[in-house]
Amino acid sequence: MPDLEYCPIPALSDNAERAALERNDPAEPITAILSAALRSTDREFAQGVCVKLSNHEHFNVRGNALLGLGHIARIDGRLDEMIVAPLITAGLQDGHEFVRGQAESAKDDIEEFLGWTF
Image (cartoon, rainbow, N blue to C red; front, side, top):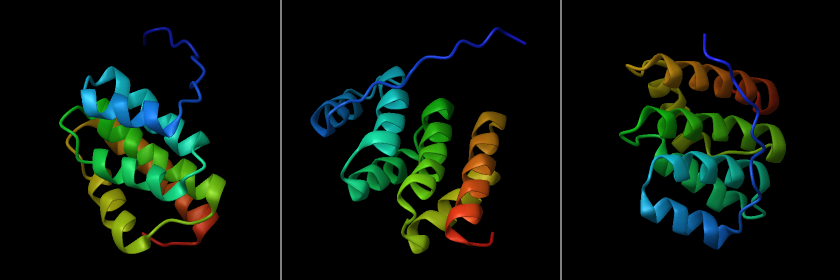
């Protein structure tokens, strides 16, 4: 297993997050997703970022988008169940192990903090 190194997630402004997402370089959305989920004061924007990128072609982006939804559930205590529940369910069946693991983490947080059942 490769050595993992902790890297703090920078606090990006909503505008910086939007710009990173528009460039669509997989390295940038990975950070922008987590910044939005963990630090954005606009929770609907944060959920929208995660929802939009949960179907991204790159597995790291998809996985972190799903993980971000779990963070929002834990921090904000609310998500749109009609939109988010199907995304988590799809993530649990994703073809990539990383995405499935992030979906599982998000599912656990959502069940714990929002009381949803999958």
